[in-house]
Image 1 (tube, rainbow, N blue to C red):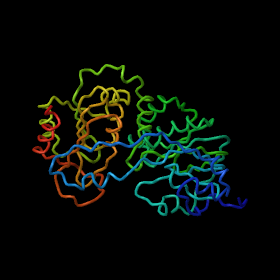
Image 2: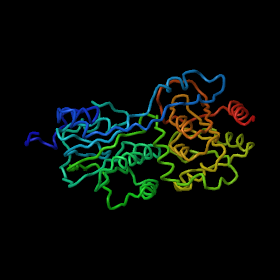
Image 3: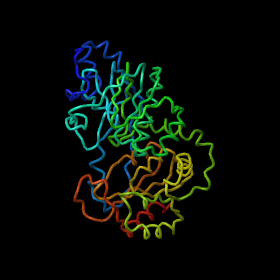
Image 4: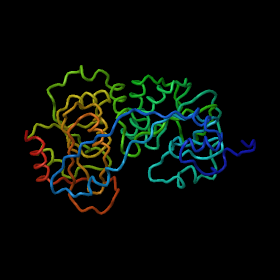
Length: 372
């Protein structure tokens, strides 16, 4: 490594994966293998087809069924660096490590850090630091699968870690609650900001697990046991039917929610606003539920706490259909159905669109789901 490398200058490019850097850095397969540990959890994918109405267009799920879980690994980076609000990872030869710095809406060549003419001043960090950052860490689903699930890989790796580098993006309550539940003390946290630029003696970097919308079963199992241990010994409170409202969310609201709620009331559903509950309480609600209806949103990450045979109906905008909660439903043995909102499909990926539910379609869906 050149001693005159300007660590605050513009990045020199990127590596797609940590092992690409390690090959370039060491040029030795034994050294690469020594610095990357891959995990094979042995879970064969067997996903049941989602339930839908007969007139649902074929594109609704067909285009989303090609994804697979991301690779699970742990990389050890000498003199690795973490920079910026989202905690992107930089190799010692001054390149972005894209796979562990994934940024929604960007490509490797358009990542925020690659556009910066200068980086903040470097702060040295002695010892071994673990990277648990995500560009979407303020989102509950991504916090669970792109941050917390990686702690399982750290534990399996058995590398002693002195500090944990995270990015909170707003200090939302579920972050502190879940870190405490997983035994991560506040004094060991380093929280990234816009002026962060840390260089550790060693960075331990677990792979991201949630950004492609196909969370792995091992992560689901780990999170459920870590955040709601002994679920099966908890009372089910009679098997409630829950409608998860997004009325207070900034986007993806149900425009005719009053009509939806009236229709659901005939089947014994009650309204729940998850933001009014702790993670522990949300886990209890989902664990005790016999049926859940909800518009697509991060709160459905709580499906990890559901019991087998729970009935799930997810409401989608026709302009935003993703499969992550169908995958989670499969992992826990829930019976998943989806219902598309009204309107033509004009865009492939407009995730903020509100949802207008066809009441006749909802009525038919409920009749199909509860006919037994």
